[in-house]
Image 1 (cartoon, rainbow, N blue to C red):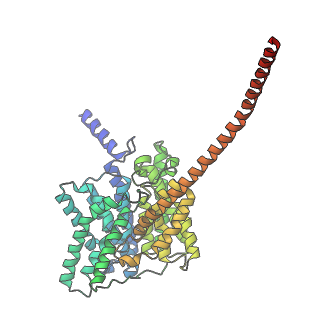
Image 2: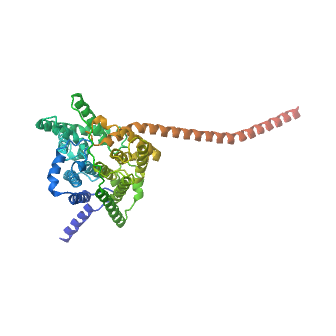
Amino acid sequence: MSNLVDLLKKKFSHDLHFPEKGTISVHNGYRLLFLFNLFLLLSSVLLMEPSHLLAEMQRILFSESHLVTDYIELTSVGTALFNSSLMTFIAIFICYHYRVPMTGGAVSAIFMVTGYGLFGKNLLNFIPIFLGVRLYSYLMNEPLKKFLLIALYGSSVSPVVSFFAFNHSLSPIFGLGMGYLIGIVIGFIMVPLALHFQSLFKRVSLYSAGFTSGMLCTMMAGICRMFGLQIDLRGIVSTEQQPELIILLVVFGLILCGYGVRMASKRHRLNLRAIWSHSGKIERDILRDTGVYNTMINMGLMTLLLAGYVLAIGAIMNGPVLGAIFCVIGFSACGAHVFNSLPLLLGVTLANALNIYAMNETVTVTAAIFAMMLCAITNAYGWKGGLIVGFVHTSMVLNIDVLHGGLNLYNNGFSGGLVAMMIIPLLDLSKQLRRKTAVGQVEDKLADHVSTSVDPALAQYNDHQSDQQQITDSSIRAQK
């Protein structure tokens, strides 16, 4: 009996503690994610009015929800957080049910659902996308967990479902059926397109699904406009400062940092240098390479950095801004950290300071925050490359929403993919030219060094040969 108890203790301890190789166990990872969602749920309960919850949730579920529909402005802070918590719970439960491995990609996908649950994503417009991915896995005879993260990322096209389902120009039954059918089709074709587009920009953009969604929604918007169905950009954004959301972020960041430092120090695994030297590429996630507690510290630091940035420029903490911060917190488990994000943040801030838009407008603030998706460029091309890309990203993201009419929630992901595709070849060219110039300079120095060392030796050799010739001539004349 004691042997059985020891065996169960050993297995339970293995499930709840971080293995030596750096992969987090399924039980421990999902336990921490459920605790995060509990924190989010409790925050929503404290800030909501229970008597208004059902009516406000109905307003969220039946809204068109395309960019920008701030659920805080549409309803209230508590209800918006409740919707975000509900969507987060669904994402965690689905991943746990299908035993998706706990990696940085899984954490980022779940936090992406959390963020966009504040402005645009809800239960009704998420279901068809999931069903489309499920249909793809069934027809391809592949396990669903292989594509489940794409389903979570791909729910960025959720506004397409709501736009058709709850469009006032269409009859309710026809619109609902059309919206769900289109959502299932988009979810189905999302998988092969996402796998294909990911290689186009060398995986330096963490939001590869955003680029895929942008292409799909641009095509969908074009088809709608071709048949006279107008898609207008929305501007439902809260303009009142929400100090409780700032407090929520600061508390969450401090909890992550404090708990991560405590547990990492206790287990002698505190290694922030491993995080700050990380490549930032999506295939090398921080969670797998550095451990769960170091990752929590990194997520907490990014939370405090972005909350401080919003406070420093005097921006409004509304649904899109808070949602953007939650998304970047999730991608801090993949590759974003303070040092590869600061050049991008500075590049966007410089662009915002020079352009015609106010630096603290919601659209410019979210552009600055979402620029962290290109953090791998800073590692590959230095802080100058990050500065340039952040500047260019701003110019792109402020104009690209016209293409998809707001049907794509990952507007910054679409822009980031285009920027990566355009700028990376130019940065590679610059690096090649610098390398070629450096090689040429080295060759010139070597040639100068060789010539200066060979010339005296050659002169000495010629003098010696001349002396030998004179001696030979003298001996010949003496013999004669």
